Length: 126
Length: 115
Image (cartoon, rainbow over all chains, first blue to last red; front, top):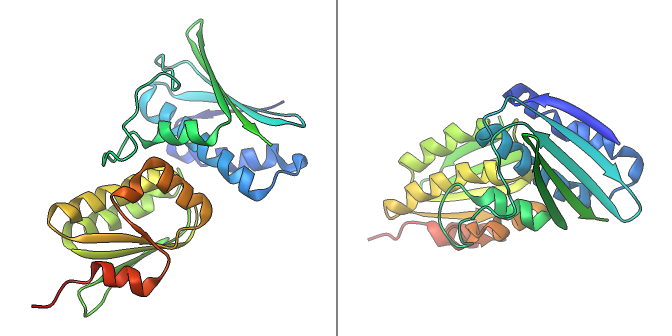
């Protein structure tokens, strides 16, 4: 398991992509697959940075033969991205697309709130 | 700068965005797109050179599009790469901003009608 602790400062947020690429380097993931993971990762990270009222979060990367899993934890406001309402697909709102994309690009999502910590596991089928 | 804006005599504006428009890069396109939204009425956004874009980058385009559409203008997207197109279609933005593959067709879709 590979982990990264980051602040939500803009200068730090851009580090999530090279970290993911480094973490996945030994797993021979196709470029197109990795791009999909990048999209989901960005949506999850942006959600915390913009809405969770916290200044840090932690990422974990796990991979096996079948799946890649990213786990993101933060101590911000409780937020379940699985149950949260989203704008309907055609709605011309500028915001609210992140959760649609997060749900689309992951094989499945698992969320839990435990002892003041949000934990979101994003699983991607290889 | 991952964005350039070019005005043509036909009244069409071509906005070319390129590179990775991610958390670190989306701020660079925000102001140019906002200015275009406030001042242009016939816009083609060329996305062929964009290798990555998620909802944050798309948000700047949607905001510009809403401003253009509000004043009766037209805006289309041109040739997004597969991952970017999947982001656009999944989020439903293509229902507001149509996607074209052919530049001539994209220009024809927005060009102001002469009177």
